[in-house]
Picture 1 (cartoon, rainbow, N blue to C red):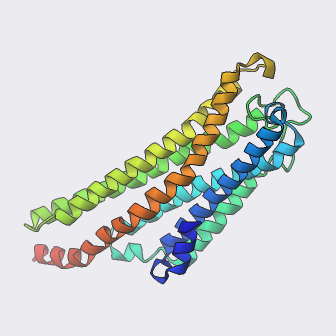
Picture 2 (picture 1 turned 180 degrees about the vertical axis):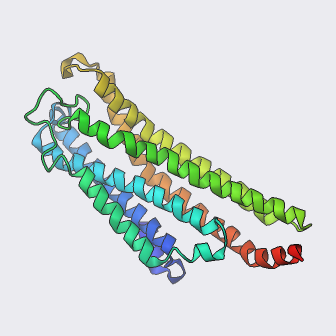
Length: 281
């Protein structure tokens, strides 16, 4: 909420990337609310979160929608940051507010469609053969369909975009050294990008890898609820807690650090064109 209110109240932050930051905060907020809803249901009636019921479809679907929206926002921010740094200043201005609004709209439509498929009928309330043991009344094939590609996207796309940013900054630093110019700004920006990108990737790994492991375990072990040890359900609850913790990690990584990082990346661009022309001469 602090991220949303701060960026809406500050005119200097009304930029395309700020729209993505606000949308990321909104999806994290929905994740927290839906996770709190599931927690209350678990406290009041633990059996429905283990054996599954129709009452769990709505909170589970909202939770899945929020997680998917968060993943798509993380990917969109990484791509926007890559376009902001790649090539030249002209590339940066191609990402306009209308583009960010369109990306936000597409992210939510896709997240709602995929997350609400159980509400549209893809659930195992009647079909007991394919029911998920850990996430009843979801179907195992639905969880595999959702988890595999989206977790892969959450890992691979940010890794590629931030690695490309680091490579671009390093190339520019080497060109500045060839021109005999100081490279302290690029070296500082490269270090900041490396630290931030590693933190982002590790946060995604810690948050989503256990959930993926739970889905794989669920698909590989066709057992009844009574045959599973309580530790399996404790692991399931811990995976939900780790995903919810990203709601605290995302504002710290993307709002507090990237604002200073943006100032560092923005400063050398004006000098870059003149120094390249001087070096060419």
